[in-house]
Length: 422
Image 1 (spheres, one colour):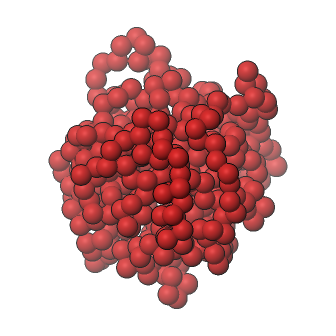
Image 2: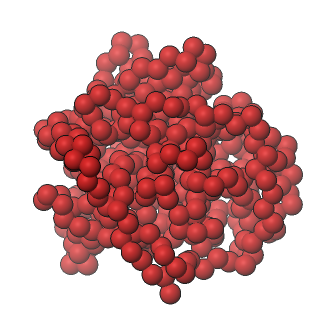
Image 3: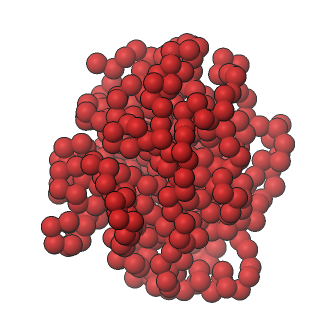
């Protein structure tokens, strides 16, 4: 039996990932640092008139782990070398994504004076210079750089008329020395924007009621895939759905696609439960994402064609597996999972067809997640708390592609494993 106590935790906005409980968890991306705040163990509370999620910590017991997935764990040095910390400034940083030429990285960080929430920054990996991309007001998450023209995609709540009020309230709370339970509120003012690199102009792409975030470009820069909870507002809900909207709005999150200018928005998934954190394959042929079970207890990695057809499950890990990203070779997917325990997130990889059991990559204590390979496939960036501080930061290492291929060949076949997508 799983027992819980409610953990007092620092507030950390998230997006394609989630953030962590005081040295126990530090994720990001709901998104990709998901507004992903584990629906499996969320509970809704009303704080100052706003519905927020509260994250518990497992004290004993745990989720069942399929025996087939048990494997001998090697030291992470088989795959990773020259590990170095890439970000140091601010309370925390995460969700780093490279430009196609590998010369820049866009990421989110809590470092803006007067704003305690994440803002989006662009780092030059050649000079080390960093500039803020987002307006500096409100909350932001889930940035990505276009391969067509360098435009920067991100989600933001800066148009919320209460954004400054909410910032000051958070600052006052932190300065008071008080602590609170972790919370993530799927802000209905979260919309997707693009900064044009040509002139610095900011363009709003979504304006539907409800949370829109977790966006990423297709390799040719012509399409954007993203997550939206608009279905909760677009139609009349049944009594059961109305109750779910009150206790777990993430249940209504689905994957959508739109053209680069925001036109032609349409839904790709239609399965009960939270679908989010989508990215295109390197050749644009498919989309990778994570799907929660309807009851929110587990999440697995899936892929589909850009029109939503041919949806295939790649993992069956009996845990929360999320933040998938396909290696530039197109041979395997890197992702994060808490298979080894609720608070122990590690980086794993699985073959792109999902035939084999996933292989564990990281073995260092602390949170490791949100893995993103460099465009040439020779490096890996990820978010980690291995430095021992409360907030996660971005790390970069050399990646051994040949050892990764060998490890996947050695991995046992997964029961019910998929076939190679054509």
